[in-house]
Length: 127
Image (tube, rainbow, N blue to C red; front, side, top):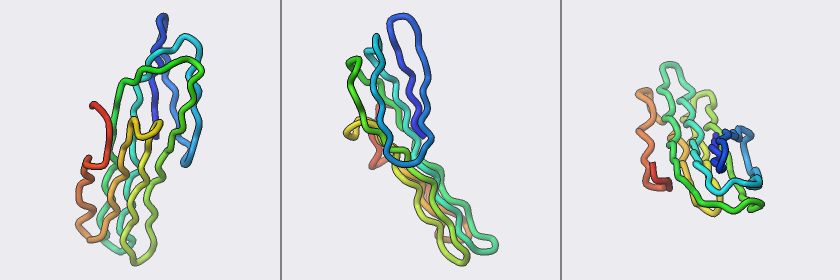
């Protein structure tokens, strides 16, 4: 998921993108900064009896200066996929702009105890 708080001189507004894949966002008139939060897709659980759960995706936030009319590409990462008798796959990475904000997806479970914690090493943001 990707959420943005649009900050103009008079008001603020929240826009969420939940459709998995590539999306486009155009900055509205009178908006000069965005508070962007990206959340990576969650990892899938192991597909066996007693299989552990997948890890949650990373959350990354950053305040970005923008110009009205500017267009950005954003990606909403998918949740990981599980299958019978197999380890869960990792969740997809969510991002905004040319890697201005990046949130890594959660790790898929490979054991009955669940996935290891997702690190923030490959994520980008201020908060």
